[in-house]
Image (cartoon, rainbow, N blue to C red; front, side):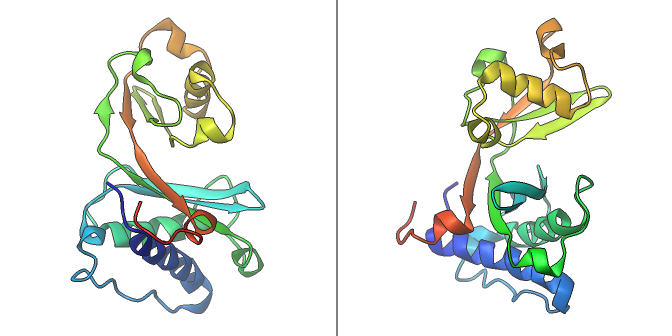
Length: 191
């Protein structure tokens, strides 16, 4: 599930143009699926917005019936104006945002907590009354070990932070292809 640098740039530009459309009303160009057939795949994706390396919005979809291109465009707009943790992005802030895209693999069930590889696996908690997701880059960015990562997942779900120690929770794992505007600019080959 690795996309070329060119495909990554197309997705990042589409995300930026989608957010810009909030202020201009001008939609991003349609994707040329003949030239970029992998952008037509139905994959989940998250778009994360930061300003000065601080979170400004993050929304996405674990699964999507839409094309990857359309999923990224939609998630970008949702992250900009519908993340409940933040007010809608302003036009002034738009100029300052950094966009990061995470393309998700299909989730798979965790057999034991030992399956979790920090920095590789994202976590999806699904228990009665508890739902939460953390992207695989989160524990790396916050220098978390596996226990801290599980605590953060429980807290995000609104549960007691050490509830994972009382019983094995129903958690699905996934991997993600993660890239951002600043990290794709200097690339010139496929990765």
